[in-house]
Length: 146
Image 1 (cartoon, helix red, strand yellow):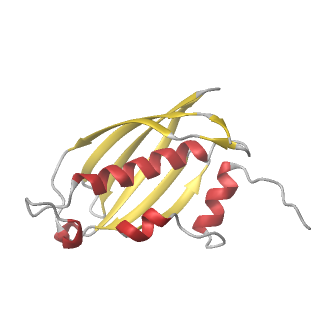
Image 2 (cartoon, one colour):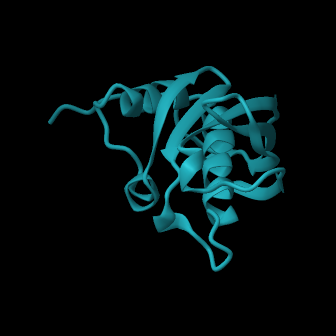
Protein backbone atom coordinates (compact mmCIF):
# COMPACT_ATOMS: atom_id res chain seq x y z
CA UNK A 1 0.00 0.00 0.00
CA UNK A 2 1.27 3.48 -0.91
CA UNK A 3 0.83 6.06 1.82
CA UNK A 4 1.10 9.65 0.69
CA UNK A 5 2.28 12.50 2.86
CA UNK A 6 -0.43 14.84 4.11
CA UNK A 7 -0.75 18.01 2.07
CA UNK A 8 -0.13 21.51 3.34
CA UNK A 9 -3.22 23.69 3.38
CA UNK A 10 -2.06 25.51 0.25
CA UNK A 11 -1.41 22.28 -1.66
CA UNK A 12 -4.80 20.91 -0.57
CA UNK A 13 -6.58 24.04 -1.86
CA UNK A 14 -4.54 24.11 -5.09
CA UNK A 15 -5.70 20.55 -5.81
CA UNK A 16 -9.31 21.81 -5.64
CA UNK A 17 -8.66 24.81 -7.91
CA UNK A 18 -6.82 22.61 -10.41
CA UNK A 19 -9.59 19.99 -10.44
CA UNK A 20 -7.49 17.20 -8.90
CA UNK A 21 -9.83 17.19 -5.89
CA UNK A 22 -13.54 18.00 -5.89
CA UNK A 23 -15.02 21.32 -4.81
CA UNK A 24 -16.56 21.15 -1.31
CA UNK A 25 -20.20 19.93 -1.34
CA UNK A 26 -21.50 23.37 -0.21
CA UNK A 27 -20.26 24.71 -3.54
CA UNK A 28 -22.64 22.43 -5.44
CA UNK A 29 -25.49 23.29 -3.10
CA UNK A 30 -25.16 27.07 -3.45
CA UNK A 31 -23.51 27.32 -6.88
CA UNK A 32 -20.08 28.77 -6.16
CA UNK A 33 -16.50 27.55 -6.51
CA UNK A 34 -12.97 28.07 -5.24
CA UNK A 35 -11.23 29.63 -8.25
CA UNK A 36 -7.91 31.04 -6.97
CA UNK A 37 -5.59 30.46 -4.04
CA UNK A 38 -2.18 31.69 -2.96
CA UNK A 39 -0.59 31.65 0.47
CA UNK A 40 -2.99 33.63 2.65
CA UNK A 41 -5.48 34.57 -0.10
CA UNK A 42 -8.47 32.58 -1.39
CA UNK A 43 -11.09 33.55 -3.97
CA UNK A 44 -14.54 32.05 -4.49
CA UNK A 45 -16.95 33.01 -7.28
CA UNK A 46 -20.69 32.46 -7.46
CA UNK A 47 -23.65 33.61 -9.52
CA UNK A 48 -26.38 35.57 -7.86
CA UNK A 49 -29.77 34.34 -9.01
CA UNK A 50 -33.45 34.13 -8.12
CA UNK A 51 -32.87 30.64 -6.67
CA UNK A 52 -31.13 32.46 -3.77
CA UNK A 53 -33.92 34.99 -3.13
CA UNK A 54 -35.34 35.68 0.31
CA UNK A 55 -38.93 36.91 0.89
CA UNK A 56 -37.84 40.48 -0.01
CA UNK A 57 -36.94 39.45 -3.59
CA UNK A 58 -33.21 39.87 -3.06
CA UNK A 59 -30.40 37.35 -2.64
CA UNK A 60 -30.39 36.04 0.92
CA UNK A 61 -27.56 37.40 3.07
CA UNK A 62 -26.67 33.84 4.01
CA UNK A 63 -25.31 33.32 0.50
CA UNK A 64 -22.94 36.27 0.88
CA UNK A 65 -22.01 35.17 4.40
CA UNK A 66 -21.22 31.67 3.14
CA UNK A 67 -19.07 33.04 0.30
CA UNK A 68 -17.18 35.19 2.80
CA UNK A 69 -16.79 32.44 5.39
CA UNK A 70 -15.45 30.09 2.71
CA UNK A 71 -12.98 32.63 1.33
CA UNK A 72 -11.69 33.79 4.71
CA UNK A 73 -11.33 30.29 6.19
CA UNK A 74 -9.54 29.06 3.07
CA UNK A 75 -7.20 32.07 3.21
CA UNK A 76 -6.19 30.88 6.68
CA UNK A 77 -6.00 27.22 5.61
CA UNK A 78 -3.70 28.25 2.76
CA UNK A 79 -1.09 29.27 5.33
CA UNK A 80 -1.27 26.13 7.46
CA UNK A 81 1.20 23.25 7.40
CA UNK A 82 0.04 19.69 6.80
CA UNK A 83 -2.05 18.16 9.57
CA UNK A 84 -3.59 21.41 10.82
CA UNK A 85 -7.23 22.60 10.87
CA UNK A 86 -8.76 26.07 11.21
CA UNK A 87 -12.53 25.91 11.77
CA UNK A 88 -14.39 29.19 11.96
CA UNK A 89 -15.29 30.33 15.48
CA UNK A 90 -16.73 33.75 14.66
CA UNK A 91 -17.82 35.69 11.57
CA UNK A 92 -18.86 39.33 11.41
CA UNK A 93 -20.49 40.32 8.12
CA UNK A 94 -21.49 43.79 6.90
CA UNK A 95 -23.90 43.94 3.95
CA UNK A 96 -23.50 47.26 2.13
CA UNK A 97 -25.87 46.92 -0.86
CA UNK A 98 -28.54 44.47 -1.98
CA UNK A 99 -27.82 41.68 -4.44
CA UNK A 100 -30.35 40.56 -7.07
CA UNK A 101 -30.31 38.21 -10.05
CA UNK A 102 -29.21 41.19 -12.16
CA UNK A 103 -26.03 41.52 -10.06
CA UNK A 104 -24.60 38.42 -11.72
CA UNK A 105 -21.20 37.00 -10.83
CA UNK A 106 -19.89 37.75 -7.35
CA UNK A 107 -16.28 37.36 -6.25
CA UNK A 108 -15.40 36.79 -2.58
CA UNK A 109 -11.75 37.36 -1.67
CA UNK A 110 -10.43 36.30 1.72
CA UNK A 111 -7.09 37.47 3.09
CA UNK A 112 -5.39 36.00 6.16
CA UNK A 113 -4.38 38.76 8.59
CA UNK A 114 -2.89 36.88 11.55
CA UNK A 115 -1.86 33.27 12.03
CA UNK A 116 -1.00 32.34 15.59
CA UNK A 117 -0.43 29.06 17.39
CA UNK A 118 -4.12 28.66 18.35
CA UNK A 119 -6.04 31.48 16.65
CA UNK A 120 -6.09 33.07 13.20
CA UNK A 121 -7.93 36.05 11.76
CA UNK A 122 -8.86 37.03 8.23
CA UNK A 123 -10.90 39.61 6.34
CA UNK A 124 -12.98 39.32 3.22
CA UNK A 125 -14.82 41.30 0.56
CA UNK A 126 -17.57 40.40 -1.91
CA UNK A 127 -17.48 42.44 -5.09
CA UNK A 128 -19.33 42.35 -8.39
CA UNK A 129 -17.62 42.24 -11.76
CA UNK A 130 -18.18 45.99 -11.89
CA UNK A 131 -15.97 46.40 -8.80
CA UNK A 132 -18.86 47.40 -6.51
CA UNK A 133 -18.57 46.25 -2.91
CA UNK A 134 -21.58 44.20 -1.72
CA UNK A 135 -20.34 42.91 1.65
CA UNK A 136 -17.23 42.78 3.81
CA UNK A 137 -16.37 40.66 6.83
CA UNK A 138 -13.87 39.51 9.42
CA UNK A 139 -13.41 36.08 10.94
CA UNK A 140 -11.62 34.25 13.72
CA UNK A 141 -10.56 30.63 13.26
CA UNK A 142 -9.30 28.15 15.86
CA UNK A 143 -5.99 26.61 14.77
CA UNK A 144 -5.44 23.02 15.89
CA UNK A 145 -3.99 19.71 14.77
CA UNK A 146 -6.23 17.42 12.74
